[in-house]
Amino acid sequence: MSAQREMKEKNPWHTPVTIITVIGVIAIVALVTVAVLQNRPVLQKYKYGIVLDAGSSHTALYIYEWPAEKDNNTGRAEQKYVCKVKGKGISSYANTPVKAGESLNECMQEAKMQVPTKRHHETPLYLGATAGMRLLNMENSSASDKVFQAVEKALQRFPFSYQGARILSGQEEGAFGWVTVNYLDDRLKQGLETTGALDLGGASTQISFVSKNYDISESPSNSVTFRLYGNDYNLYTHSFLCYGKDQVLRMALAHQTKSGPGTILDPCFHPGYLELKDYSLLYDSPCVSDRKPQNATGTFNHSGAGNFKQCQEVVKKVFNFTSCKYSRCSFNGVFQPPLQGPFGAFSAYYYVMDFLKLTDATMPLKDVKEKLANYCATPWNEIVKQHPEVPIKYLAEYCFSGTYIITLLTDGYNFTSESYSNINFIKKIKNSDAGWTLGYMLNLTNMIPAEAPDSPPLPHAGYVTIITISALILFVLFILSLRFICPSFQKTPHIV
Ligand SMILES: Nc1nc2c(ncn2[C@@H]2O[C@H](COP(=O)(O)OP(=O)(O)OP(=O)(O)O)[C@@H](O)[C@H]2O)c(=O)[nH]1
Ligand SMILES: [Ca+2]
Image (cartoon, rainbow, N blue to C red):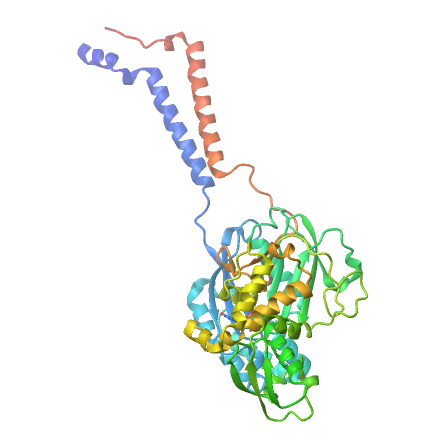
């Protein structure tokens, strides 16, 4: 019995301080574990949104995803998937509207696979049409209504939450492109200087930027005001219908074929290029239909001369610089405030400048022009040999498109040799394509709050560290106070 007692008394594990220490440590571990688990970011589940971009040249389906917990404030929506619809844009089905709906089926089936089944019913689905449908609506509104009916019918067969198909105004197209670029760059949330947006489509082109201290009342139709994350923005935006690159090509050809059938020697196409083209196809658009020559019935020979300077002269003719009722204009009498800040140029700006290897922002404008001049002067058979992988239709038009881009930016929008270096040719920002679709969805789902969201005062790691240190300090103070109050705790008893 006494040996047993002696063992017990010698065993330091049985002293009161040790017992308190062990209990204290257990309590701290429990406290910190509970605090960490309670405040751990919940395993993120995602929500989804689908936007169909029904452009003039083609339709693309985008799926966006964002953390389900945070859709109203801090989580960022990102592009998860893109599907390029086969064939042309929906406006090309004016005579066979049912086919416009059918053309979307393949990408919609893909979307069904990409979005988890349990989210299908709550996933909003939008279709926005741009300049192709704007033109068709102007030309033949009943044909455009029929295309929308067919598209609507096709989309409603899918299990998503269908939110409608409509034509975006040019203003919306420009403004949502700007929102996308600045949202993806985190410029809106942080209240940083914004980036302007330049979008070049097939049938229209948009320019949108914030220009400080300009009088928006000078042209109210060009201004859009936003309050995003607690900051006010006065955005200038304009969409030029018919100034997408496909329609400008028609306009440039129309100028050159004024005198009716025959052969045109086009400086915007490579020397040796020769195609037989149809007058009825060339003039089949409201952008040029009023210019159709009286005696133009059949075909014309479209041959290339490959001269950048002359091509610029031809392209300049599609702009009207003669009248401006505002303090300053870009072209066609459209108000434009002074250019300001960096710009992101996407869609065809990127496709064309990327092919021509002219996306390097440090390349001076005069070098860009020189390279373009050399490219245009290269014989067509050499170009074809150098790029066997590129579809002939795209290949034939890069000289024209590059020349149009430079002319639009400099003569049209007034970028100078200096300010040209503020333009970045971009396709994606952080894995999401630049374009109006993301901004459109963010707006319709109210995902950008007007006021800055409340953020937790501390990041998670900081919170855990402070909890742990505070618990340790409290514990040490507790032990020290015990030793003061109760002298028997001052030293470990040794009973021998
Ligand atoms: N070279 C090249 N051109 C492309 C590519 N994709 C589209 N394009 C062309 O670039 C132009 C603009 O394309 P998009 O931005 O898709 O135009 P869109 O949205 O159909 O037209 P809008 O309704 O006017 O916006 C069109 O002339 C297309 O034919 C590509 O991958 N490479
Ligand atoms: Ca477009």
